[in-house]
Image (cartoon, rainbow, N blue to C red; front, side, top):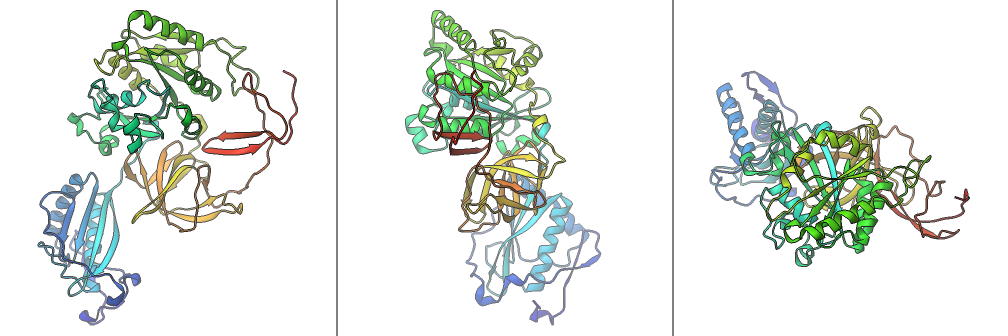
Length: 532
């Protein structure tokens, strides 16, 4: 760890105030020259963008430091909050390299610049240059995401009803061409584009500023990465599949994403379908406040429109199962259907919506834009509904809904902070594993709403990068827990169930359990009936 070219003495670097401070010893994992990859010649330094070349940053004066701060701020703006520094590299891309001590001084200078801008600096890689070592350092700006302004809405409905088109029009500000152009920004997979069906959950953000203007549009930059910074309120729209083949995935997202509201999209041409009834019964059983969209009004006549509205009123009259142990919706008063065709005060609707007493219906067209204004005004006014479900002061609990492995990042898990807080550098217990045990893992980085952050609190959906273990298989339903929380793996449990009308259950029958992000096949061992 000593620099032979500097007499083996520890180095020091100047900070912004001109004072010297000692630097840490060079990282032991830099290794000997033979163990480091060779850095090839890079392209010349780009004038624009978020990449900056610096041969060395040693003994920086106060004026030079201030210039570096201004330069870093510009690079961060170019990279939407992320900048990369290639240290030991000349402007023409020649990887000259530095001694260990000078490289350490240069890295500490970048860390000081990042600290001045309230950013985080992280060494990405170190390689061998022509005469020394080169390093790539990432500077990232972290933003705080306020859970009070995060409203989650699951968008469901029969295939072809226009769910993805609606989400695409809302988030892009551009009307559809009548052939599905708007939904192209929502689809995630090639086969979805080819057959026009959403098969997985697609998450899009819709931001509002204090004046009620949508911040997704070009006047605010038009980039999702900037929404948290320029928005006073952000809605998370979760577009779910409508084909019966993907019903399990849809139900799993309705239970796992813990939405504040559900939006049921119904085509005015086809009316209420069997899958619409299925979605509605699940939403009511989960006690999720819902509203409805009557789409494609531009190609539907008044007679068909009125017939679909009658079908909706008949739908809400059907008995459904409620989570309330003491009552079911079959014995309570069904909600009132309110068709919103003109400007109304959203506050008059929202309270009755949250109490399950009213279901507003918004007739609209994504082609001519008629009715979109009323919907946008309504969405802007929706408050968060899930504060009581999450406790920020409780021990950490993170429910995993999805996982993937990303090159140069490792294992990334996506889910919701159920209780407590998750911080970068925090150690948590991941499980239960197949052996019913839990594995200690470390949180390397956090992203929420396309934005890097150092912490996320209860109620927020986030993606966590954790140290990868090649043979570790992560599945939906696993949790990340505080190490001090008692951990229990359950394979047998008692439950109260309400069979849907027409279903038959008996001992040893197989069921699928949906509980939060958990979707698990189970066997009914035995049951006692109350005779009702």
